[in-house]
Length: 212
Image (cartoon, rainbow, N blue to C red):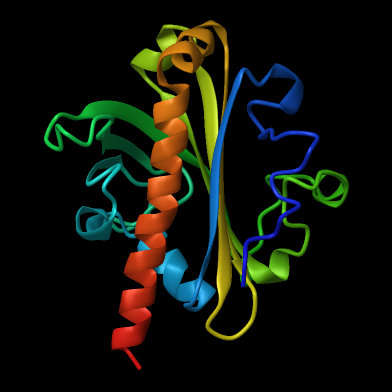
């Protein structure tokens, strides 16, 4: 099954914190995965697994978890963390550190209201039916923000039936620094989002196959 050809929508992409009209740099990727959505979701939120599958971000440091949550490697609403990203695949141990905070988590069992219902219904960037989508978002914090960058990245893992799902991920950047990021890194970041999806697909399908 191929990814939905209507996504990303012709009207463009936006997020809660970086609405469409203020987006300077949109980056996105999508893929279909022959594995259950719940299994793909577990890989995505368990940062201890990233070293084994994510070539773009093989290291994640969790700085703090929300009150009463276990101090572990799982991404939760309001987790503060750092991605150690590899911008140059020829230098796999040279990291760019990006401070982040989880802004939204929605699952079929616990749907969130972070994106208002009327926006879900009117904006084709989102999956409207929350009963079949796992969604997480995070925003940039720290030094990049101080230098004038606003960004938010979303992931949707959409249940497409037994042992099948579609993954969509997109980041929208705005603010003064986004112009420099667009000029310098747009092509690289778009490539890295594609690699992220391909890596997640490979890891999820191998894990699902081994469990059969």
